[in-house]
Length: 429
Image (cartoon, rainbow, N blue to C red):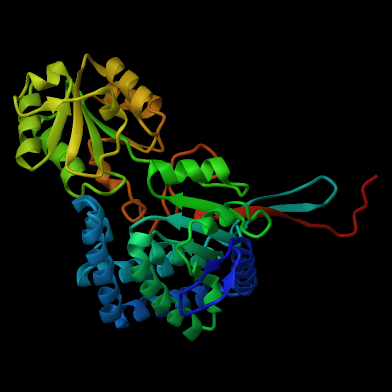
C-alpha cells in the first residue's frame, strides 16, 4: 500500500511506514537541535510563532471556513461544528495561549532530587524531554497550536496527525507556526503535520517503536480504544469525559443551580462538560435545578424518580449512564445519599472529572478521597477541567490513566528524567 502526500511539504508517493519513518527521522533530528537550545531561545521561538498566528489570521480563518462548509455538508452535529469553528476571537485566544506557554518556567534541566553517597558519588535526577511525541487528534484545530507550543517548550519535537474535519485549518495553523520557528532559528521539522489523511498512516505511527517515543490520542472513545489496542509505542491516554456533578443534600440551592447549568451548558462540546447530574433524594432544590437546565436548552434523560420532578425529562436507558454526549443533553438520576452517589460514579465515571456540590465539609472530604478520577472538585463547575484554568498554560489533554501523568498534561507531563552521576574516580569494589 502507498499513500500520496498532498501538502505543500511533499508530493511523494510512498508506503505509510516509509512516510512515518522519513518524517520521524526529520523530527528526531530537529529535536536534537531543540535539546541544545536555551530556555530563552525556546520562549522567543514561541513568541514568534504566536506573532505569526496573528499575522496569518485571514489565511487561517479562510481555511477554517472551508472545513466548516465541508462539515455542514457532511452533517456534523452542532457540537462538532462548535469544536471545529474558529473566529477572530478564538484565534486570538490560540495565539495568546502560545504566548502564555512561552512565559511558563521551562521544566527541562530542573533537578528533581539530588544526594551524595558515602563513597562520594553525587546523584542527581534531572528532567529531560521525552523526544518525539506523536499526537493523534480529532476536529479541534486549536490542538495543533496547543500541542506544538507545549512540545516545543518542553524540548520535544511533535508529529501531529489531525482529523480530516479540520484538515485545512490544521495546515494553515502549522504553516504559521513554522514561520515563527524558522524566524527564531528552530528547524520547521520540530513541529510536523502528517501530510496525508490516509488512516493507514495512523497505524504506521502506532507501530513506529524506536522512532516515536510516545503517542498521545486526543479524541473520541473509538480513537483512543484503537490507539490503546494497536500501539507498540507508549501511550498517554485521554479517555472520554463522562463527568458527574453530584448535588449533595447539604448543597446551597443557588450554588447548585448555577454550577450545574454552567457545567453542562457553558460549552457542551468540551471534555470537561457535565454529562450526568446526580441529585440527592434529600436535596430540596432538585426541581429548580432540573428546570434551569431545561430552560437553558438542555435535553434531560432520567430515571423514574428524576422524571417525577419534571414531565419534560425523557426516559433514560442503560446506555445513557455511559455516554459522553458532547451536546446539550445530560442524564439525571436521584440517589439515596453520598454512598449511592459514590457507587454510581464508580460504576459509570470515565475517570476524568467528577464534582460534589455541598456545604458539608465531611462529605466533601470523603468525596475527594474516594472518587478515583484524575480531577475531583468541590463546589465548582467541571468546565474548569482545563490546563489553562489550572495555571499550566495550554494542555495536551486530560490524562485519565494512573501512570506518568494524570489530569491536565502540560509541560511537566511531557518530560521524563535521567540520572546524572558525578564522581572523582571511584571504582566499585
